[in-house]
Image (cartoon, rainbow, N blue to C red; front, side, top):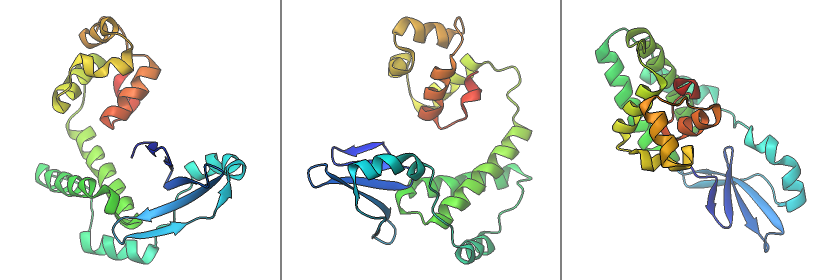
Length: 191
């Protein structure tokens, strides 16, 4: 979700925060798209909100243990031992990703569990030995249908983008963080 949704709403952690009353007040909400329910945290003045904004970014809404337990009992996640199991869980995770805005907190937690299981299997079975940050970037660009010019916001110029893509220039930590956000991978993949 983009940090600025409209001129009147921003995403902050798990919350959508609306400017109301001519930007005099802030209304932090949690929207459950699956059920069509909006939970209002409370109306705040802009000053009150500014003091609590950082805390709200790190606020994690509570997963219902009973509901999560029922979900796990239905799905029975386990350590991935075969490529067939890996592909099945990847397909399941992709389906959850497609429904991102509709997921319950329990489904979000389950999708994180799937990501951890998949990552563990792939780290053990598909090591990146011999690859370089530049080759990993090239691979991700191809996979996402991107060209160097699509990453100018990351690198600042076409010359730097070209040098990085060819491996002539190292990727900085700042650039790695931006690339990680674009490709939804860990930043250290590029360092």
